Image (cartoon, rainbow over all chains, first blue to last red):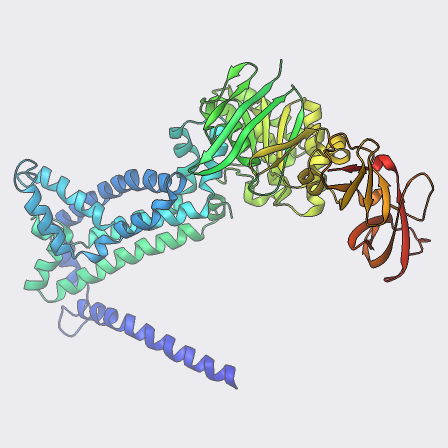
Length: 264
Length: 348
Protein backbone atom coordinates (compact mmCIF):
# COMPACT_ATOMS: atom_id res chain seq x y z
CA UNK A 1 0.00 0.00 0.00
CA UNK A 2 2.79 2.37 1.05
CA UNK A 3 4.85 1.44 -2.01
CA UNK A 4 1.86 2.13 -4.29
CA UNK A 5 1.32 5.53 -2.64
CA UNK A 6 4.99 6.50 -2.97
CA UNK A 7 4.91 5.39 -6.64
CA UNK A 8 1.96 7.69 -7.24
CA UNK A 9 3.75 10.69 -5.71
CA UNK A 10 6.94 9.91 -7.60
CA UNK A 11 4.96 9.87 -10.87
CA UNK A 12 3.09 13.03 -9.88
CA UNK A 13 6.26 15.03 -9.16
CA UNK A 14 7.96 13.60 -12.21
CA UNK A 15 5.07 14.65 -14.44
CA UNK A 16 5.01 18.12 -12.85
CA UNK A 17 8.75 18.56 -13.49
CA UNK A 18 8.36 17.48 -17.11
CA UNK A 19 5.50 19.93 -17.58
CA UNK A 20 7.51 22.72 -15.95
CA UNK A 21 10.47 22.11 -18.27
CA UNK A 22 8.74 21.22 -21.50
CA UNK A 23 5.58 23.34 -21.52
CA UNK A 24 7.42 26.62 -22.27
CA UNK A 25 9.49 24.81 -24.86
CA UNK A 26 6.38 23.38 -26.46
CA UNK A 27 4.76 26.86 -26.34
CA UNK A 28 7.77 28.37 -28.13
CA UNK A 29 7.82 25.57 -30.73
CA UNK A 30 4.09 25.90 -31.35
CA UNK A 31 4.36 29.68 -31.68
CA UNK A 32 7.31 29.42 -34.08
CA UNK A 33 5.19 27.23 -36.39
CA UNK A 34 2.20 29.64 -36.56
CA UNK A 35 3.62 32.39 -38.73
CA UNK A 36 1.06 31.61 -41.44
CA UNK A 37 -2.38 32.39 -40.13
CA UNK A 38 -4.54 29.30 -39.54
CA UNK A 39 -1.93 26.64 -40.39
CA UNK A 40 1.34 25.14 -39.10
CA UNK A 41 4.36 26.00 -41.22
CA UNK A 42 8.15 26.29 -41.16
CA UNK A 43 8.06 29.79 -42.61
CA UNK A 44 9.76 31.41 -39.59
CA UNK A 45 12.60 28.88 -39.90
CA UNK A 46 12.86 29.54 -43.64
CA UNK A 47 13.18 33.27 -42.98
CA UNK A 48 15.86 32.70 -40.35
CA UNK A 49 17.84 30.30 -42.54
CA UNK A 50 17.63 32.64 -45.56
CA UNK A 51 18.90 35.61 -43.57
CA UNK A 52 22.62 36.15 -44.37
CA UNK A 53 23.10 37.79 -40.92
CA UNK A 54 22.08 34.49 -39.29
CA UNK A 55 24.73 32.57 -41.22
CA UNK A 56 27.30 35.27 -40.57
CA UNK A 57 26.55 35.06 -36.83
CA UNK A 58 26.51 31.27 -36.92
CA UNK A 59 29.85 31.06 -38.75
CA UNK A 60 31.45 33.66 -36.50
CA UNK A 61 30.24 32.03 -33.27
CA UNK A 62 31.23 28.56 -34.48
CA UNK A 63 34.74 29.77 -35.33
CA UNK A 64 35.09 31.56 -32.00
CA UNK A 65 33.78 28.46 -30.18
CA UNK A 66 36.30 26.20 -31.91
CA UNK A 67 39.21 28.56 -31.14
CA UNK A 68 37.97 28.82 -27.53
CA UNK A 69 37.89 25.02 -27.24
CA UNK A 70 41.42 24.60 -28.59
CA UNK A 71 42.83 27.27 -26.27
CA UNK A 72 40.86 25.92 -23.28
CA UNK A 73 42.19 22.38 -23.88
CA UNK A 74 45.75 23.69 -24.25
CA UNK A 75 45.43 25.65 -21.01
CA UNK A 76 43.36 23.37 -18.80
CA UNK A 77 44.64 19.87 -19.60
CA UNK A 78 48.26 20.61 -18.59
CA UNK A 79 47.07 22.79 -15.67
CA UNK A 80 44.76 20.17 -14.20
CA UNK A 81 47.36 17.47 -14.87
CA UNK A 82 50.01 19.44 -12.97
CA UNK A 83 47.52 20.16 -10.21
CA UNK A 84 46.82 16.43 -9.77
CA UNK A 85 50.45 15.42 -10.02
CA UNK A 86 52.52 18.09 -8.33
CA UNK A 87 50.38 20.51 -6.31
CA UNK A 88 47.22 18.72 -5.11
CA UNK A 89 47.25 20.98 -2.05
CA UNK A 90 46.45 23.96 -4.33
CA UNK A 91 43.17 22.39 -5.44
CA UNK A 92 40.85 24.42 -3.11
CA UNK A 93 42.34 27.72 -4.35
CA UNK A 94 42.14 26.70 -7.99
CA UNK A 95 38.54 25.49 -7.57
CA UNK A 96 37.53 28.88 -6.18
CA UNK A 97 39.25 30.64 -9.09
CA UNK A 98 37.43 28.45 -11.61
CA UNK A 99 33.99 29.32 -10.26
CA UNK A 100 34.66 33.09 -10.40
CA UNK A 101 32.88 33.39 -13.79
CA UNK A 102 29.73 32.16 -12.01
CA UNK A 103 30.12 34.76 -9.25
CA UNK A 104 31.16 37.82 -11.24
CA UNK A 105 28.36 38.95 -13.61
CA UNK A 106 29.34 38.90 -17.29
CA UNK A 107 28.42 42.57 -17.61
CA UNK A 108 30.97 43.51 -14.92
CA UNK A 109 33.56 41.34 -16.61
CA UNK A 110 33.02 42.85 -20.07
CA UNK A 111 33.25 46.40 -18.72
CA UNK A 112 36.50 45.42 -17.06
CA UNK A 113 37.80 44.05 -20.36
CA UNK A 114 36.77 47.13 -22.33
CA UNK A 115 38.20 49.51 -19.73
CA UNK A 116 41.51 47.66 -19.58
CA UNK A 117 42.04 46.85 -23.24
CA UNK A 118 40.65 49.92 -24.99
CA UNK A 119 43.58 52.08 -23.89
CA UNK A 120 47.36 51.76 -24.08
CA UNK A 121 49.53 49.85 -23.49
CA UNK A 122 47.40 46.94 -24.76
CA UNK A 123 44.75 48.51 -26.97
CA UNK A 124 42.88 45.52 -28.38
CA UNK A 125 39.56 47.10 -29.38
CA UNK A 126 40.95 49.06 -32.32
CA UNK A 127 40.57 46.42 -35.04
CA UNK A 128 38.15 43.48 -35.55
CA UNK A 129 41.04 40.99 -35.35
CA UNK A 130 42.37 42.23 -32.02
CA UNK A 131 38.79 42.48 -30.70
CA UNK A 132 38.35 38.83 -31.69
CA UNK A 133 41.44 38.00 -29.62
CA UNK A 134 39.84 39.82 -26.71
CA UNK A 135 36.48 38.07 -27.16
CA UNK A 136 38.14 34.63 -27.33
CA UNK A 137 40.03 35.25 -24.10
CA UNK A 138 36.70 36.31 -22.59
CA UNK A 139 35.02 33.10 -23.84
CA UNK A 140 37.89 31.04 -22.40
CA UNK A 141 37.25 32.62 -19.00
CA UNK A 142 33.46 32.21 -19.23
CA UNK A 143 33.73 28.53 -20.20
CA UNK A 144 36.49 27.86 -17.64
CA UNK A 145 34.21 26.30 -14.98
CA UNK A 146 32.89 23.73 -17.47
CA UNK A 147 36.18 22.82 -19.09
CA UNK A 148 38.06 22.68 -15.78
CA UNK A 149 35.48 20.42 -14.17
CA UNK A 150 35.18 18.12 -17.17
CA UNK A 151 38.97 17.62 -17.32
CA UNK A 152 39.21 17.34 -13.53
CA UNK A 153 36.55 14.61 -13.41
CA UNK A 154 38.36 12.79 -16.22
CA UNK A 155 41.66 12.96 -14.34
CA UNK A 156 40.03 11.62 -11.18
CA UNK A 157 38.78 8.60 -13.12
CA UNK A 158 42.33 7.54 -13.94
CA UNK A 159 45.30 7.04 -11.62
CA UNK A 160 47.27 9.96 -13.05
CA UNK A 161 50.28 9.58 -10.79
CA UNK A 162 50.83 5.86 -11.36
CA UNK A 163 50.23 6.14 -15.12
CA UNK A 164 52.71 9.02 -15.34
CA UNK A 165 55.34 7.17 -13.33
CA UNK A 166 54.79 3.96 -15.31
CA UNK A 167 55.29 5.88 -18.56
CA UNK A 168 58.36 7.62 -17.13
CA UNK A 169 59.93 4.33 -16.06
CA UNK A 170 59.39 3.07 -19.62
CA UNK A 171 61.39 5.97 -21.00
CA UNK A 172 58.74 8.59 -21.86
CA UNK A 173 59.40 12.30 -21.59
CA UNK A 174 56.68 14.75 -20.47
CA UNK A 175 55.40 15.40 -23.99
CA UNK A 176 55.15 11.65 -24.73
CA UNK A 177 53.35 11.05 -21.42
CA UNK A 178 50.75 13.72 -22.24
CA UNK A 179 50.35 12.66 -25.86
CA UNK A 180 50.34 8.86 -25.47
CA UNK A 181 48.96 8.27 -22.00
CA UNK A 182 47.10 11.22 -20.48
CA UNK A 183 45.27 12.75 -23.47
CA UNK A 184 43.91 9.48 -24.92
CA UNK A 185 42.52 8.58 -21.50
CA UNK A 186 40.88 11.99 -21.19
CA UNK A 187 39.21 11.93 -24.61
CA UNK A 188 35.68 11.65 -23.27
CA UNK A 189 36.25 14.25 -20.56
CA UNK A 190 37.78 16.71 -23.04
CA UNK A 191 34.98 16.10 -25.53
CA UNK A 192 32.35 16.67 -22.85
CA UNK A 193 34.01 19.91 -21.79
CA UNK A 194 34.39 20.97 -25.42
CA UNK A 195 30.72 20.41 -26.22
CA UNK A 196 29.54 22.37 -23.18
CA UNK A 197 32.05 25.06 -24.11
CA UNK A 198 30.66 25.09 -27.66
CA UNK A 199 27.05 25.43 -26.47
CA UNK A 200 28.05 28.26 -24.08
CA UNK A 201 29.87 30.27 -26.75
CA UNK A 202 27.13 29.76 -29.35
CA UNK A 203 24.53 31.35 -27.07
CA UNK A 204 26.73 34.05 -25.51
CA UNK A 205 25.26 37.56 -25.76
CA UNK A 206 26.93 40.08 -23.46
CA UNK A 207 30.59 39.87 -24.55
CA UNK A 208 29.70 39.90 -28.23
CA UNK A 209 27.19 42.76 -27.84
CA UNK A 210 29.50 45.04 -25.89
CA UNK A 211 32.52 44.26 -28.05
CA UNK A 212 30.28 44.75 -31.12
CA UNK A 213 31.09 41.49 -32.93
CA UNK A 214 28.73 39.69 -35.36
CA UNK A 215 28.01 36.68 -33.15
CA UNK A 216 24.83 34.61 -32.98
CA UNK A 217 23.80 35.91 -29.53
CA UNK A 218 23.46 39.60 -30.52
CA UNK A 219 21.66 38.56 -33.75
CA UNK A 220 19.09 36.62 -31.69
CA UNK A 221 18.63 39.56 -29.33
CA UNK A 222 18.23 42.03 -32.21
CA UNK A 223 15.69 39.79 -33.93
CA UNK A 224 13.77 39.56 -30.66
CA UNK A 225 13.31 43.33 -30.62
CA UNK A 226 11.86 43.62 -34.11
CA UNK A 227 10.17 40.33 -35.00
CA UNK A 228 7.67 37.96 -33.39
CA UNK A 229 7.91 34.45 -34.89
CA UNK A 230 11.55 34.36 -36.00
CA UNK A 231 12.98 34.75 -32.45
CA UNK A 232 10.87 31.79 -31.37
CA UNK A 233 12.29 29.76 -34.27
CA UNK A 234 15.80 30.87 -33.32
CA UNK A 235 15.21 29.88 -29.70
CA UNK A 236 14.22 26.37 -30.86
CA UNK A 237 17.28 26.18 -33.15
CA UNK A 238 19.47 27.24 -30.23
CA UNK A 239 17.83 24.63 -27.97
CA UNK A 240 18.32 21.98 -30.65
CA UNK A 241 22.01 22.86 -30.89
CA UNK A 242 22.48 22.62 -27.12
CA UNK A 243 20.53 19.35 -26.88
CA UNK A 244 22.43 17.94 -29.81
CA UNK A 245 25.69 18.71 -27.95
CA UNK A 246 24.40 17.12 -24.74
CA UNK A 247 23.12 14.08 -26.66
CA UNK A 248 26.52 13.70 -28.27
CA UNK A 249 28.18 13.74 -24.83
CA UNK A 250 25.77 11.05 -23.61
CA UNK A 251 26.33 8.95 -26.71
CA UNK A 252 30.10 9.10 -26.45
CA UNK A 253 30.30 8.48 -22.71
CA UNK A 254 27.90 5.53 -22.94
CA UNK A 255 29.60 4.07 -26.00
CA UNK A 256 31.52 0.82 -26.09
CA UNK A 257 34.85 2.58 -25.88
CA UNK A 258 34.07 4.37 -22.63
CA UNK A 259 35.41 1.55 -20.45
CA UNK A 260 38.51 1.33 -22.55
CA UNK A 261 39.27 4.99 -21.98
CA UNK A 262 38.52 5.11 -18.30
CA UNK A 263 39.85 1.67 -17.53
CA UNK A 264 36.65 0.63 -15.73
CA UNK B 1 81.82 -4.70 -7.56
CA UNK B 2 78.20 -4.22 -6.56
CA UNK B 3 75.53 -3.84 -9.19
CA UNK B 4 73.30 -1.37 -7.37
CA UNK B 5 74.62 0.70 -4.49
CA UNK B 6 72.73 2.96 -2.14
CA UNK B 7 75.17 5.04 -0.13
CA UNK B 8 74.11 7.11 2.92
CA UNK B 9 70.68 7.78 1.42
CA UNK B 10 68.61 10.28 3.33
CA UNK B 11 65.18 11.66 2.49
CA UNK B 12 63.16 14.28 4.36
CA UNK B 13 59.75 15.74 3.54
CA UNK B 14 59.84 19.09 5.35
CA UNK B 15 60.56 18.28 8.97
CA UNK B 16 59.56 14.65 8.61
CA UNK B 17 62.41 12.20 8.02
CA UNK B 18 61.35 9.34 5.74
CA UNK B 19 64.69 7.57 5.19
CA UNK B 20 67.94 8.03 7.09
CA UNK B 21 71.45 6.75 6.47
CA UNK B 22 70.37 3.91 4.20
CA UNK B 23 73.29 1.85 2.91
CA UNK B 24 72.92 -1.22 0.72
CA UNK B 25 74.90 -3.07 -1.94
CA UNK B 26 72.93 -5.33 -4.27
CA UNK B 27 74.67 -7.98 -6.35
CA UNK B 28 73.72 -8.77 -9.99
CA UNK B 29 70.72 -11.12 -10.17
CA UNK B 30 69.96 -10.76 -6.48
CA UNK B 31 66.38 -10.61 -5.17
CA UNK B 32 66.23 -8.15 -2.27
CA UNK B 33 63.06 -7.35 -0.35
CA UNK B 34 62.41 -4.20 1.67
CA UNK B 35 60.20 -5.34 4.55
CA UNK B 36 58.59 -3.14 7.16
CA UNK B 37 55.36 -1.63 8.44
CA UNK B 38 53.54 1.24 6.69
CA UNK B 39 55.50 4.49 6.86
CA UNK B 40 58.87 2.83 7.50
CA UNK B 41 60.40 4.37 4.34
CA UNK B 42 60.59 1.27 2.15
CA UNK B 43 58.51 2.69 -0.71
CA UNK B 44 60.31 6.05 -0.49
CA UNK B 45 63.64 4.24 -0.88
CA UNK B 46 62.30 2.31 -3.88
CA UNK B 47 60.98 5.54 -5.41
CA UNK B 48 64.43 7.11 -4.99
CA UNK B 49 65.94 4.19 -6.92
CA UNK B 50 63.29 4.66 -9.63
CA UNK B 51 63.96 8.41 -9.73
CA UNK B 52 60.48 9.51 -8.67
CA UNK B 53 61.90 11.05 -5.49
CA UNK B 54 65.21 12.86 -5.16
CA UNK B 55 67.29 12.00 -2.09
CA UNK B 56 67.92 14.85 0.34
CA UNK B 57 71.48 13.50 0.51
CA UNK B 58 73.34 10.35 -0.47
CA UNK B 59 74.25 8.60 -3.70
CA UNK B 60 72.68 5.90 -5.88
CA UNK B 61 74.92 4.09 -8.37
CA UNK B 62 74.14 1.39 -10.90
CA UNK B 63 77.16 -0.46 -12.32
CA UNK B 64 79.32 2.42 -11.12
CA UNK B 65 77.17 5.06 -12.89
CA UNK B 66 75.85 7.80 -10.58
CA UNK B 67 72.05 7.77 -10.95
CA UNK B 68 71.22 10.09 -8.05
CA UNK B 69 69.92 12.96 -10.19
CA UNK B 70 69.20 11.08 -13.43
CA UNK B 71 65.55 11.53 -14.53
CA UNK B 72 63.38 8.38 -14.23
CA UNK B 73 63.05 7.99 -18.01
CA UNK B 74 66.83 7.78 -18.42
CA UNK B 75 67.55 5.18 -15.71
CA UNK B 76 66.63 1.93 -17.49
CA UNK B 77 64.88 0.70 -14.37
CA UNK B 78 61.61 -1.25 -14.70
CA UNK B 79 58.84 -0.63 -12.20
CA UNK B 80 55.73 -2.60 -11.25
CA UNK B 81 53.09 -0.75 -9.23
CA UNK B 82 50.58 -1.93 -6.65
CA UNK B 83 47.76 -0.48 -8.79
CA UNK B 84 49.12 -2.17 -11.98
CA UNK B 85 49.16 1.22 -13.79
CA UNK B 86 48.43 -0.34 -17.18
CA UNK B 87 47.52 2.22 -19.83
CA UNK B 88 43.72 1.84 -20.22
CA UNK B 89 43.72 3.07 -23.83
CA UNK B 90 46.17 0.39 -25.00
CA UNK B 91 45.80 -3.34 -25.52
CA UNK B 92 47.94 -5.86 -23.64
CA UNK B 93 50.37 -6.05 -26.59
CA UNK B 94 50.54 -2.27 -26.90
CA UNK B 95 51.16 -1.94 -23.16
CA UNK B 96 53.99 -4.47 -23.25
CA UNK B 97 55.52 -2.91 -26.35
CA UNK B 98 55.15 0.70 -25.20
CA UNK B 99 58.65 1.11 -23.74
CA UNK B 100 60.24 -0.33 -26.89
CA UNK B 101 58.15 1.99 -29.07
CA UNK B 102 59.36 4.96 -27.03
CA UNK B 103 62.94 3.69 -27.45
CA UNK B 104 62.38 3.82 -31.23
CA UNK B 105 62.84 0.09 -31.84
CA UNK B 106 61.74 -1.33 -35.24
CA UNK B 107 58.20 -2.71 -35.41
CA UNK B 108 59.35 -6.28 -36.08
CA UNK B 109 61.63 -6.23 -33.05
CA UNK B 110 58.82 -4.86 -30.87
CA UNK B 111 56.40 -7.55 -32.08
CA UNK B 112 58.93 -10.33 -31.39
CA UNK B 113 59.77 -9.03 -27.92
CA UNK B 114 56.07 -8.62 -27.05
CA UNK B 115 55.45 -12.23 -28.09
CA UNK B 116 58.41 -13.37 -26.01
CA UNK B 117 57.18 -11.46 -22.95
CA UNK B 118 53.60 -12.70 -23.32
CA UNK B 119 54.93 -16.25 -23.56
CA UNK B 120 56.94 -15.64 -20.40
CA UNK B 121 53.79 -14.69 -18.47
CA UNK B 122 51.72 -17.32 -20.33
CA UNK B 123 49.28 -14.77 -21.74
CA UNK B 124 49.79 -15.05 -25.51
CA UNK B 125 46.05 -15.34 -26.08
CA UNK B 126 45.32 -12.05 -24.35
CA UNK B 127 47.41 -9.79 -26.62
CA UNK B 128 44.42 -7.99 -28.14
CA UNK B 129 42.52 -7.46 -24.90
CA UNK B 130 42.26 -4.18 -23.01
CA UNK B 131 43.23 -3.96 -19.32
CA UNK B 132 39.60 -3.67 -18.18
CA UNK B 133 38.96 -7.08 -19.77
CA UNK B 134 41.53 -8.76 -17.47
CA UNK B 135 41.44 -9.90 -13.85
CA UNK B 136 43.68 -8.25 -11.25
CA UNK B 137 46.22 -11.08 -11.40
CA UNK B 138 46.35 -10.97 -15.20
CA UNK B 139 46.79 -7.19 -15.16
CA UNK B 140 49.71 -7.49 -12.76
CA UNK B 141 51.32 -10.13 -14.99
CA UNK B 142 51.02 -7.76 -17.95
CA UNK B 143 52.53 -4.97 -15.83
CA UNK B 144 55.44 -7.28 -15.05
CA UNK B 145 55.92 -8.15 -18.73
CA UNK B 146 55.76 -4.47 -19.66
CA UNK B 147 58.45 -3.60 -17.11
CA UNK B 148 60.68 -6.47 -18.29
CA UNK B 149 60.21 -5.84 -22.03
CA UNK B 150 62.65 -2.92 -22.03
CA UNK B 151 65.38 -5.17 -20.56
CA UNK B 152 65.88 -3.02 -17.45
CA UNK B 153 69.05 -3.31 -15.39
CA UNK B 154 66.98 -3.43 -12.20
CA UNK B 155 63.37 -4.45 -11.65
CA UNK B 156 61.48 -2.62 -8.89
CA UNK B 157 58.23 -4.00 -7.50
CA UNK B 158 56.17 -1.85 -5.14
CA UNK B 159 53.83 -4.15 -3.18
CA UNK B 160 52.69 -5.76 -6.45
CA UNK B 161 50.49 -8.39 -4.79
CA UNK B 162 48.74 -6.27 -2.16
CA UNK B 163 45.60 -5.66 -4.21
CA UNK B 164 45.08 -9.35 -5.06
CA UNK B 165 43.22 -12.06 -3.18
CA UNK B 166 45.15 -14.69 -1.18
CA UNK B 167 45.10 -17.52 -3.75
CA UNK B 168 46.15 -15.37 -6.71
CA UNK B 169 48.78 -13.74 -4.51
CA UNK B 170 50.38 -17.08 -3.80
CA UNK B 171 50.34 -18.14 -7.48
CA UNK B 172 51.74 -14.85 -8.68
CA UNK B 173 54.40 -14.83 -5.97
CA UNK B 174 55.76 -18.11 -7.31
CA UNK B 175 55.54 -16.82 -10.85
CA UNK B 176 57.48 -13.64 -10.02
CA UNK B 177 60.25 -15.75 -8.49
CA UNK B 178 60.28 -18.13 -11.48
CA UNK B 179 60.56 -15.27 -13.97
CA UNK B 180 63.20 -13.50 -11.88
CA UNK B 181 65.34 -16.65 -11.72
CA UNK B 182 64.80 -17.38 -15.43
CA UNK B 183 65.92 -13.89 -16.46
CA UNK B 184 68.47 -13.45 -13.67
CA UNK B 185 67.39 -9.85 -13.23
CA UNK B 186 68.36 -7.82 -10.15
CA UNK B 187 65.11 -7.20 -8.26
CA UNK B 188 64.06 -4.95 -5.41
CA UNK B 189 60.72 -5.93 -3.92
CA UNK B 190 58.80 -3.80 -1.43
CA UNK B 191 56.34 -5.53 0.86
CA UNK B 192 54.87 -5.40 4.35
CA UNK B 193 54.05 -9.11 4.13
CA UNK B 194 56.75 -11.09 5.96
CA UNK B 195 55.72 -14.37 4.34
CA UNK B 196 56.19 -12.86 0.88
CA UNK B 197 59.60 -11.50 1.82
CA UNK B 198 60.74 -14.76 3.47
CA UNK B 199 59.62 -16.95 0.59
CA UNK B 200 60.87 -14.81 -2.31
CA UNK B 201 64.07 -13.14 -1.28
CA UNK B 202 67.76 -13.86 -1.39
CA UNK B 203 68.15 -11.11 1.19
CA UNK B 204 65.72 -9.07 3.24
CA UNK B 205 66.16 -5.49 4.44
CA UNK B 206 63.96 -4.98 7.51
CA UNK B 207 63.13 -1.31 8.02
CA UNK B 208 61.54 0.72 10.79
CA UNK B 209 61.07 4.49 11.06
CA UNK B 210 63.25 5.19 8.04
CA UNK B 211 66.20 3.12 9.25
CA UNK B 212 67.56 -0.30 8.40
CA UNK B 213 67.03 -2.62 11.35
CA UNK B 214 68.71 -5.65 9.81
CA UNK B 215 69.91 -6.97 6.45
CA UNK B 216 70.19 -10.71 6.03
CA UNK B 217 69.01 -13.89 4.38
CA UNK B 218 65.48 -15.04 5.27
CA UNK B 219 66.99 -17.65 7.64
CA UNK B 220 69.15 -15.06 9.38
CA UNK B 221 66.26 -12.62 9.72
CA UNK B 222 63.95 -15.27 11.16
CA UNK B 223 66.35 -17.27 13.29
CA UNK B 224 68.76 -14.57 14.36
CA UNK B 225 66.88 -11.27 14.55
CA UNK B 226 69.30 -8.51 15.49
CA UNK B 227 66.81 -6.26 17.23
CA UNK B 228 63.62 -6.57 19.23
CA UNK B 229 61.75 -4.88 16.36
CA UNK B 230 62.89 -7.52 13.83
CA UNK B 231 62.12 -10.32 16.27
CA UNK B 232 58.59 -9.03 16.78
CA UNK B 233 57.88 -7.96 13.19
CA UNK B 234 59.02 -11.16 11.48
CA UNK B 235 57.05 -14.14 12.72
CA UNK B 236 55.65 -14.59 16.23
CA UNK B 237 57.93 -14.44 19.20
CA UNK B 238 57.75 -14.78 22.97
CA UNK B 239 59.62 -12.04 24.80
CA UNK B 240 60.02 -12.74 28.49
CA UNK B 241 61.56 -10.20 30.90
CA UNK B 242 64.37 -12.05 32.70
CA UNK B 243 66.97 -11.27 35.30
CA UNK B 244 70.60 -12.13 34.58
CA UNK B 245 72.20 -14.59 36.97
CA UNK B 246 75.48 -15.31 35.21
CA UNK B 247 76.51 -13.17 32.23
CA UNK B 248 79.39 -15.54 31.43
CA UNK B 249 77.18 -18.61 31.11
CA UNK B 250 74.00 -16.92 29.85
CA UNK B 251 72.06 -17.98 32.90
CA UNK B 252 68.88 -15.99 33.52
CA UNK B 253 65.92 -16.20 35.90
CA UNK B 254 62.22 -15.85 35.16
CA UNK B 255 60.49 -15.66 38.55
CA UNK B 256 61.80 -18.74 40.35
CA UNK B 257 62.69 -20.65 37.18
CA UNK B 258 66.23 -20.68 35.81
CA UNK B 259 66.96 -20.78 32.05
CA UNK B 260 70.01 -20.72 29.84
CA UNK B 261 70.16 -18.54 26.72
CA UNK B 262 71.81 -19.80 23.52
CA UNK B 263 73.06 -16.39 22.42
CA UNK B 264 74.01 -13.72 24.92
CA UNK B 265 77.10 -12.04 23.45
CA UNK B 266 75.90 -8.50 24.03
CA UNK B 267 74.92 -8.90 27.70
CA UNK B 268 75.81 -5.84 29.71
CA UNK B 269 74.40 -6.77 33.11
CA UNK B 270 71.10 -4.89 32.66
CA UNK B 271 67.67 -6.52 32.73
CA UNK B 272 66.96 -8.05 29.32
CA UNK B 273 64.35 -10.12 27.56
CA UNK B 274 64.54 -13.73 26.57
CA UNK B 275 63.28 -14.39 23.02
CA UNK B 276 61.96 -17.75 21.86
CA UNK B 277 59.73 -18.65 18.90
CA UNK B 278 56.41 -20.41 19.72
CA UNK B 279 57.28 -23.36 17.44
CA UNK B 280 60.46 -24.07 19.46
CA UNK B 281 58.41 -24.92 22.57
CA UNK B 282 57.23 -28.47 23.25
CA UNK B 283 55.04 -29.85 26.04
CA UNK B 284 56.69 -31.82 28.86
CA UNK B 285 59.96 -31.63 30.79
CA UNK B 286 63.32 -32.79 29.40
CA UNK B 287 66.48 -32.81 31.45
CA UNK B 288 69.32 -30.79 29.92
CA UNK B 289 67.00 -28.41 28.10
CA UNK B 290 65.27 -25.25 29.28
CA UNK B 291 62.07 -26.13 31.15
CA UNK B 292 59.23 -23.87 32.23
CA UNK B 293 56.11 -24.59 34.27
CA UNK B 294 52.91 -22.68 33.75
CA UNK B 295 49.13 -22.84 33.49
CA UNK B 296 47.11 -23.03 30.21
CA UNK B 297 45.33 -19.75 29.57
CA UNK B 298 43.75 -20.52 26.16
CA UNK B 299 43.88 -22.96 23.23
CA UNK B 300 43.26 -21.57 19.72
CA UNK B 301 42.92 -23.48 16.44
CA UNK B 302 44.71 -21.74 13.55
CA UNK B 303 44.18 -24.43 10.89
CA UNK B 304 47.41 -26.33 10.46
CA UNK B 305 48.66 -25.32 13.90
CA UNK B 306 47.18 -24.98 17.38
CA UNK B 307 48.36 -22.10 19.55
CA UNK B 308 48.41 -22.68 23.30
CA UNK B 309 48.86 -19.68 25.58
CA UNK B 310 50.47 -20.36 28.93
CA UNK B 311 50.75 -18.13 31.92
CA UNK B 312 54.30 -18.44 33.27
CA UNK B 313 55.34 -16.36 36.27
CA UNK B 314 52.73 -13.72 35.40
CA UNK B 315 53.71 -13.56 31.71
CA UNK B 316 51.99 -15.02 28.65
CA UNK B 317 53.93 -17.53 26.59
CA UNK B 318 52.71 -18.88 23.20
CA UNK B 319 53.37 -22.46 22.13
CA UNK B 320 52.57 -23.68 18.57
CA UNK B 321 51.85 -27.33 17.83
CA UNK B 322 51.05 -29.04 14.55
CA UNK B 323 47.36 -29.90 14.38
CA UNK B 324 47.63 -33.70 14.22
CA UNK B 325 44.52 -35.86 14.61
CA UNK B 326 45.86 -37.78 17.58
CA UNK B 327 46.96 -34.62 19.36
CA UNK B 328 45.72 -34.44 22.95
CA UNK B 329 45.22 -30.84 23.84
CA UNK B 330 45.32 -29.47 27.38
CA UNK B 331 42.35 -27.56 28.76
CA UNK B 332 42.29 -23.99 29.99
CA UNK B 333 43.42 -23.74 33.62
CA UNK B 334 45.41 -27.00 33.58
CA UNK B 335 49.09 -26.91 34.64
CA UNK B 336 51.53 -27.54 31.78
CA UNK B 337 55.30 -27.93 31.55
CA UNK B 338 57.16 -26.94 28.38
CA UNK B 339 60.74 -27.33 27.24
CA UNK B 340 62.90 -25.78 24.51
CA UNK B 341 66.53 -26.13 23.42
CA UNK B 342 69.11 -23.73 24.79
CA UNK B 343 70.17 -22.70 21.25
CA UNK B 344 66.54 -21.82 20.34
CA UNK B 345 66.47 -18.83 22.67
CA UNK B 346 68.51 -15.67 22.90
CA UNK B 347 68.67 -12.47 24.87
CA UNK B 348 67.61 -9.10 23.47
